[in-house]
Amino acid sequence: VSQTAEVELVSRNVTVEVTVNVTKEIKTEVAAACPRGHFCNAGAKFACPINTYNDVEDATDVRFCKPCPQNSGTLAVGGESVADCVCDATFYSGTSSDEAQCVLCPLGAPCDAPNTTTATLPLGIGYWRISTASTDLRRCPDGHTNTTACIGTSSASELGCQANHTGVYCRSCV
Image (cartoon, rainbow, N blue to C red; front, side):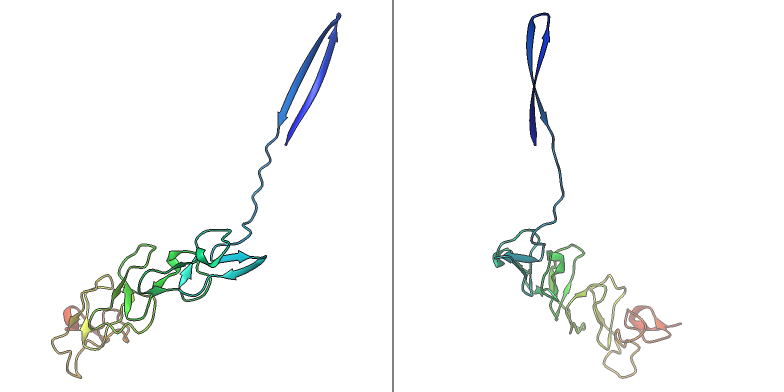
């Protein structure tokens, strides 16, 4: 908004004309007309389809909805960033970055559900790993028998050992 004022000063037969320009800045925060995860057209708001995301505001058509990286997808419509893309079943996220880098689950890890990570990597019966940060799954020496202490992640232990067992290949008693 600009305003102009003219002032005339008269003193002892001398006239001075002064022009003053006043500029006033008005800042208002306005909510985006079309939020992330959506596109808007003809006054209507549409969620980006499943397995896509839109990370910008005020998108005008479906082309703003970007596909998720390979072997990943969203669990619902309206994904707002690449972080909403999770690994498909049979893959796990082997990274801690925002972008899904989905790797095929290793032998011994029955990844039947989407959104598996290194920490939640399941262990099949007869397999063991040293920690939840490890993707090095090892077949227990007695893993082929029905007396193995390596019972997978259905037990209370995230490392695949049955109750009262711990250590390498679940061979130590607690």
